[in-house]
Length: 111
Image 1 (tube, helix red, strand yellow):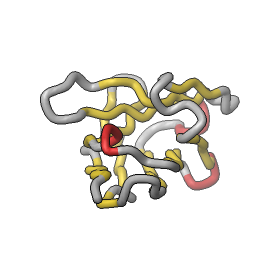
Image 2 (tube, helix red, strand yellow):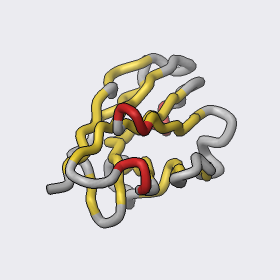
Image 3 (cartoon, helix red, strand yellow):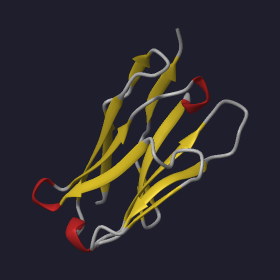
């Protein structure tokens, strides 16, 4: 079955960086578009970034210029490099492909 496992979350100070990883299994990773979403307390889950099978990317306006999504098909992994983090980036970050979601990883930006 499809499995998505996120990692790399944690506590970071404003202005800091984190890199999230999402390892996929149980499906053809290389031909599957991938996405990162986030859900902050009391808010709806929202799109952060997506990447197609040919690595075309799309970003939410709130993260453009700070976040970078990438994929390594040899490792069945998609990444989200997050720089210049802000307190408003605090959320649980989820990986998604098709209708399948990972379990999420917590990112907390606080001094």
